[in-house]
Length: 346
Image 1 (cartoon, one colour):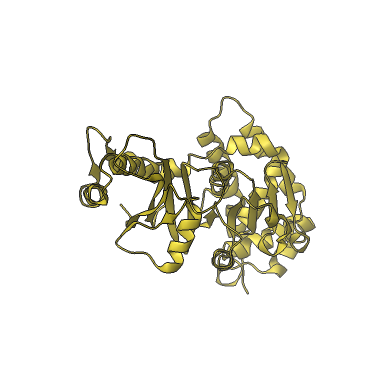
Image 2 (tube, rainbow, N blue to C red; image 1 turned 90 degrees about the vertical axis):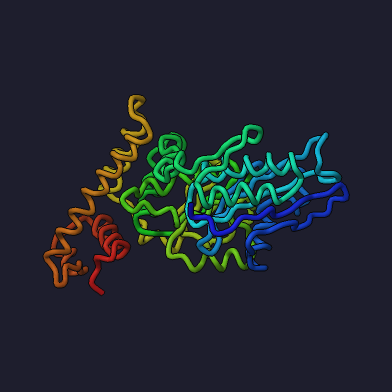
């Protein structure tokens, strides 16, 4: 299990004060500030999020927050959050694990019991308890985590405009998604990397970002990303994206500075129709739709590799592309795709 630390990040007492109670083994002050922001106990909002996840500085965090109900040994505590940080993306795995730890903490009110459960998972891959439930690592395959999002739902909402998302992901552009509800953000954003299944790269996912300097600085260090925000102010931050998705309004906007690289043509229309046709087929599952899109992507990449092989060092040049007399939008897309796939001769 690729966990490198876990912590009971905070408790909120009857006075409304939030305290960082326990941590094992340790976290930096910078990461602690980020985690406290994510666990929602420090905000004035009455809305609690039972489970959220995200990524900061290549570390995944998984936060479970509990509303403490009487009777309990946790005197004067109204809420608490447990945070697990890890190197792997697997929300279902860590949600299940943190539920077991939460039940232990509610029952005993003592971090030592949680620590025992945590160590058991680290050493044996299992945490078993008749009263608190059991957790078994091998039940949670990473491929299941990758396939848990629904591409069919994405296409159902955006139809042919899904091609904009596909193109942006293929070209490793920056996509920002806005929705006031973090749960909706998590559900939508986690599905998008599956549109480029050939990469199986969920490190591009930053599903829950605040408009805070350190978090934005971390985001800027990434080449391309899928980033989720609950703050409507992000609409005005065109410096953060090439493609902006307003989820509540079902609108996708390409920023002015990205219109040339993201120009759409006949090839995009064909791919868009293909994606929609596959996703709207009621007999096809999400897995089959992802497989269909992946096959189409491999076909495009195979053609690109063939073109590159004709060039020096098996790299593609703009001159070689121009000799093929592709339509301008297709030539433009293939040129930028070659750059994204490191097939371009510079």
